[in-house]
Image (cartoon, rainbow, N blue to C red; front, side):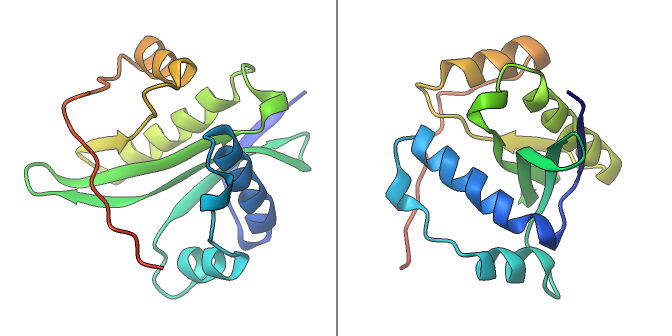
Length: 152
């Protein structure tokens, strides 16, 4: 099995939405996904794209993973990249695909000259935490609490 990572295109959006829903199931929040294909297209491929994504494609035809990211800004550091999600379809986990996707995001961050790459991981997602710590020496902080307000 050959898996290639490439920049996502508009044509990849149905598969990306499927992966987003698969992640929501894994994170025990299947009813939380309200985004539509139209939203993904307008927000990622419109006049002012708000995000970018890489996809992992098996044998040049089947999308088995993705990394979804966007710019952020730190008043202390400057330009940053925020990794919203890395998703690998359940049947393809533990085959190095997540690492390929994370490495692609790291390369993008370096190419863009950002000062920091940021992401979140759920405290119970031990496989992901161990992946980030063991492969990259990542600092997984438990100091910061997340705040949010939802607008429906």
